[in-house]
Length: 218
Image (cartoon, rainbow, N blue to C red; front, side, top):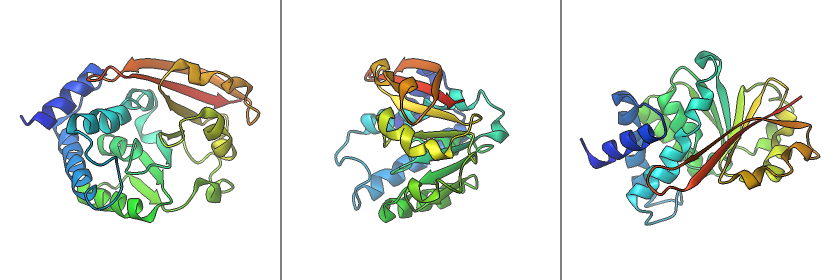
């Protein structure tokens, strides 16, 4: 077993996530393509250590998996706003073939990379939209079961941005570092918002804190 495979398997296991051999195969191809393309275009910080790439990008993305799997899997359609190099949406698409994923990314070089990885992995459950989310707010209301983003960390920025897309049936998953970041969410002027669930954890190698918060309107 290669070190990368072992690290992904064991790291996911520490997060309570079981990855199949096929899941690991797809993720390792993705890791290899990310490393290759990052030599030419700005996808992640240059010279990032391999362990940090696996933890901060791939394992961090997989933390959403248990939240998504609480729903009927064939009814999951996740919108990832500002996906960049595919985190978390494309990572999740690689291990949830029964769900649907839409990745929004305005930067063309990153879009080219995303579409290359999708073709390389043979994924049929993910679409890339080369645009800004604001251009689709009127057309996409209620289209998705879940909305998330790693690119927009502050709820006070992210929630108003995606508010036109949200109905009471949609779950917004906030990817945060600490619980303090939730202060003021339920009073945000773009609401009304309600925090319906939170899950705190630590990444397996660095011990860095992570918090997922599920937010809905009503």
